[in-house]
Amino acid sequence: MPLDTPPVFLKKPSVAHVRYLVADSQLISKSFSGTAKQPHIGHGGIPGTDFVSQRKLSLSRDEFKFLPLQSMKLPASGLWTMPNWQAPYESRYRLELCPNGDQSTVLTFACEGVPNSAGPQLQEILSRPTHRLSLKEKELLDPKIGDDVFASTEILNGKHVLCSEFENEGKKVYSIWFNHNPDGTQPMFLAMIVFEAKPKQYAKEIGQIKECLKTIIWLDKVDIVPSSGAK
Image 1: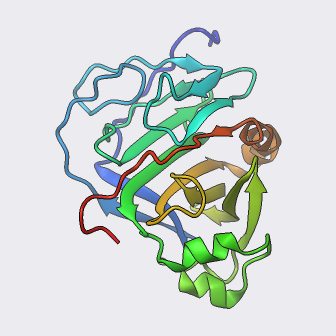
Image 2 (image 1 turned 180 degrees about the vertical axis):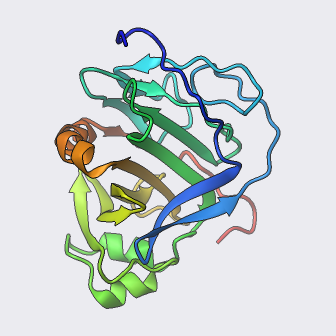
């Protein structure tokens, strides 16, 4: 398939909104009800609405105004936007991209817009010097990270992030959690970037995905403002 030809998406997205949080090496699924029409063609879509996939060589805040970054490079061959029925709404967003012809390899940017959704301890864990998470620290998170999951804190272009790598339903997954807003701001709004692929493709792609992550220029201002009464 030519690189400039949009891929054909044969399956409609599941109604379940998948929340990429590690819990005993499983992904947690949540239901989401929403009917707001996605206004950006190529930035997602709702089943039954028009959707035209777009090839992206990079991401920018100018185009995807909900992202927690100013810019980020993508693999040289580009990634294509995937149909996603969850349109950006208030502080919640989700963007999925995949290589042309391989919808099982997905790079996801997501945030539920919920203050301290992973537990108040995550902010404290991220504030400590970079380290591999102990079993006790894993249990402090909500949901807890499985004992067999490798997880560590790192500094990615000046931002403190929690990285984990695990297997789920025949795929390998690399996930980073961080505060959508600048480090240390309260409350914390958990955002995540998740890369998943079948093992063979994961081994082939993860190196360049990590190189792309190193090109992120993070947003340097408070973007999600908690509603009155949020903690």
